[in-house]
Image 1 (cartoon, helix red, strand yellow):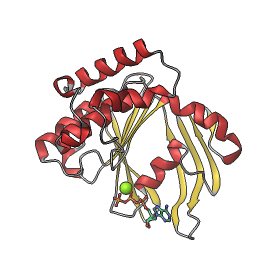
Image 2 (cartoon, helix red, strand yellow; image 1 turned 30 degrees about the vertical axis):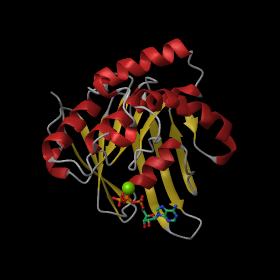
Image 3 (cartoon, protein in one colour; image 1 turned 135 degrees about the vertical axis):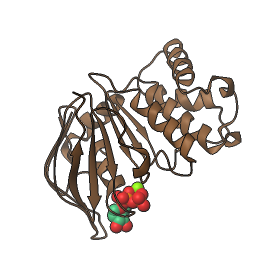
Image 4 (tube, rainbow, N blue to C red; image 1 turned 90 degrees about the horizontal axis):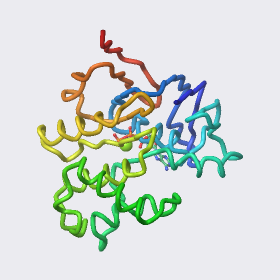
Length: 225
Ligand SMILES: Nc1ncnc2c1ncn2[C@@H]1O[C@H](COP(=O)(O)OP(=O)(O)OP(=O)(O)O)[C@@H](O)[C@H]1O
Ligand SMILES: [Mg+2]
């Protein structure tokens, strides 16, 4: 699913956000990325999403090389990705349902299919009763779930959630993590960045990556058997 070899990311202002990243993520995994603020978690997700390209090294995501010359293919690749951003990126003035469908509009879904998938996704996240509410009238946890519904409605094979437990109390944070990991299946990988290290680690068969000053450390592997 993801193969990174000696990857570096240097932003245009000179900040070296990621150094010497080597990583293999097979399909069907749950991966948690932890680490202090500024350690490079969001930067790593941006590379996986093709929002930034490696400054050095090679990165493959779902079989595609992630570099500038492949940008047309990478746009196509995004159909298979469900990103959930740290700041949600929901569109105010639109309903929950509209926000969820917006994510699919440009991906070639028919309007019947869009409505069907959106409704299914909202049911999965428990937000069907609020589907006609404006997103700005939702609580934080509900916004989080709306963002998740938008990400999963296209049935992605790679779900990337950036700090989905931020601003939530323990119970809600756990609910969100359980919800996100429930989308894992044999073809679908779920990658979650989080500060909430005390809440993670109970699921079977998940991997932990710790980031520190732009470097990556594989923490421990929890085996199912
Ligand atoms: N667009 C950018 N241009 C320049 N530097 C950036 C940019 N985005 C992030 N950085 C820098 O790269 C480093 C890693 O940032 P990143 O956002 O990946 O950290 P993070 O681990 O996600 O932090 P947080 O937990 O606060 O979300 C930081 O030093 C940050 O200041
Ligand atoms: Mg971040």
